[in-house]
Length: 397
Image (tube, rainbow, N blue to C red; front, top):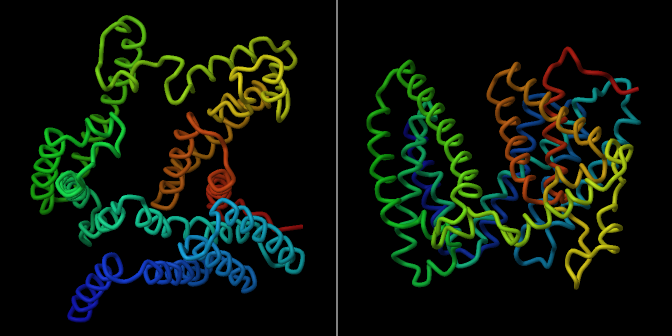
């Protein structure tokens, strides 16, 4: 206990020094070392990757990803990510050729997981720390509010309270805080929202910290139903605001909740345009799509924007519908749904964590385009989830 207390005290002091006193390279170097150690622990100590060359390759790629975050180096993170994925692909293929008799497919999937996903999650601390306007160093401290108790549900309200208090602190110390947020962000960061959240979070923490697990499970179930009800209610209200209540003025929230063609930097207009193009496809092309690049080819003829060629729908599912048709999009969605169903049946913390990553990517894909860093990690999540069941592993060759 004495050693743990001393480590916690000196560790916290070092974190404060790294965030506010030392130059950024100190924190970046420490996180880079943690990335390599974490990759080694996740893959090596657990024996998920038995092959030493695959483990070494994963550790080197993990280090390369961390170095790509160094502010002293003029590197583009997207380029670094693409190059490292290629290195991992070529290296793993070569190792498989050498050890195909003894190395299972799951080791490659776990290698990608440990080399790319594990350090990418750790490096989110650096990405937050490097945020503009010096907010990052405050946000990085938030996880320290979560004490080491057996059940995460006891810590969650405290984290909410800490987040709310941090937002209030930002408002007090940053003179142009409001100018750096969207209208939606300004509304949610108002003291009228943050103060009750801080009080409720703190109260919930003190009420739950000594409760038995049965009570915690009941609270979690009630919380889940409340979230589900809130999501359904929000969906209904959004539909009404854009149909029956479309003339109702919403002030600063109007740009967010009224889905005009200009919503989301012209996204709604682009989606309508892309769906109209798909509607003009002949029946056969609607089934199998027009192939990669079909949107740009059609936009050359129609031009949605007069000064630019539109080559992305800014919704991955509409993009897949144009490229692959109904059959291709259906197969893609079925793949994801089956993976989530597998995670639900499998159970366990790792399976649910992987499923949460898939869901997160699936939600953001509604309004974004597929890019190398994100889509690569998405397929790594799918591969690792597929390799969870040892009984279904196949040996290479």
